[in-house]
Length: 166
Image (tube, rainbow, N blue to C red):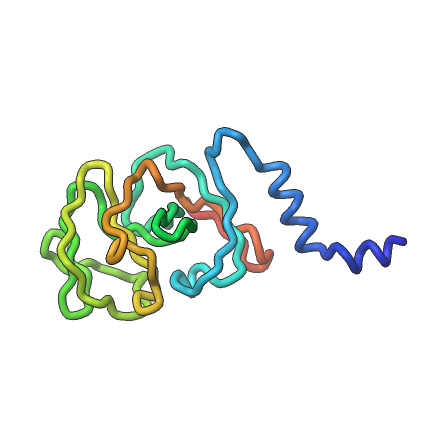
């Protein structure tokens, strides 16, 4: 019987079900998420599983956040590039913050130019690391409200890629 059961339920499915059961909270202070696109590779790859929490302190440039794309009704994961009260723009494939070139070690490809965006005190500007593949980021959605974001805390699967994001 055990062999039959193990054929039906593999270890990955059982592990993810247990994580979901033990970590599910009604207050929605965190979320679990499966990476379903390549816009954040190589940092996050398709079929990675992560946990994100409500930010307890201010977000910083380089943090990774999950938010809902209300146009498509899906959750997406992107990197914080622009912070509150900054002006974000681009020129010749480079991101500019307040008209100064951003030291952007996360970008894996050049950035298509986009219109200047002035962030308010409760907004951030997000992009995927693979700028040519990235959709559902601030270039198309505009600024993202901080209150709608969860900050990436852990990558818990696959096991050989477990990582804490502090």
